[in-house]
Length: 185
Image (cartoon, rainbow, N blue to C red; front, side, top):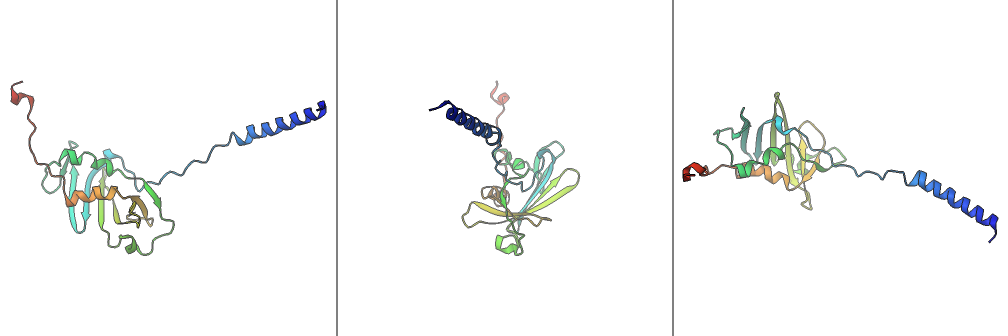
């Protein structure tokens, strides 16, 4: 091979390599779209929760000392069953938002809603959301924040945790745990 052909080939390789280095390798890969929030609230701002499921209602409030109690009786919920509920109510991410505004909410189980939840936030702010039926494949549940036209798809494991607050309230058996002084230690 002659020197001139080798030189031209080396220049072509350098140009193509420079192009790839400058333009192709430095492009950021497209970021996957993050799932939108159904709603988002700070846990420390939560002061009240009301869940209505199929006509039955259960209300909870946070006292000034930070302890959550049943509104009707003032009793403390079972700590094992209650501990994660305020975190759950800070808001889930949805799997997606339906593209078109929903004209007939009954097809999603949202009119009338199967479950409705009111979340009270410090400062007198309150918002409501409703939950409907599961999607055909059972992987998501339809939900809507009152005042918004958007219908969200929420992970189907989230709504049953909220409806259990009504169907099987986290009442504490009240069985005291013995302290170490009761055993003479």
